[in-house]
Amino acid sequence: MADVYDKETRSSVMQKIRSKGNKSTELRLIDLFKEYRITGWRRNYPVKGHPDFVFSDKRVALFVDGCFWHGHNCRNTRPKENADYWDKKRERNILHDKKITDSFEARGWTVVRIWECELKKKNRNETMARLQEVLNQYKQHNIDT
Image 1 (cartoon, rainbow, N blue to C red):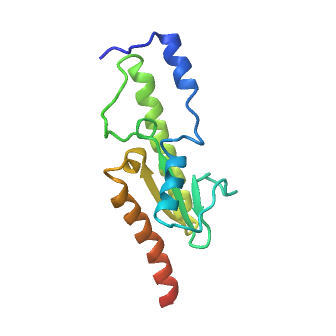
Image 2: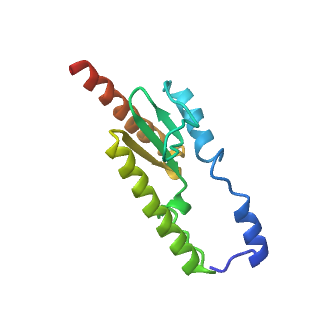
């Protein structure tokens, strides 16, 4: 399918997408934290790798990844125009995500990655249960040791 915008308009649209404060990712997750009564998180935590949220007492770093930008094929949307550029961009993002995850795990952190599509109504119960399980495992681990 051809793009509905010309090249200049598409470029302008893409430039307006920000890496922080996106309503479909981080701000939506904050609403879910409140709804599911998940506490103990912080944003803008000064740690190398810049996770979207940190549970510092549990050493859990949480990243909310946009499906298109980070290579999830849930919607199978791939631009036909400039396809090489976008494929390489996504590949670089995937490699960068892996390096960041490896870096956190090497420092003893648990990394949780949530896809943008997992925050939608039909997926959110499962997603939040997965997050709560990770957070509870840490709590259980501390009690046992």
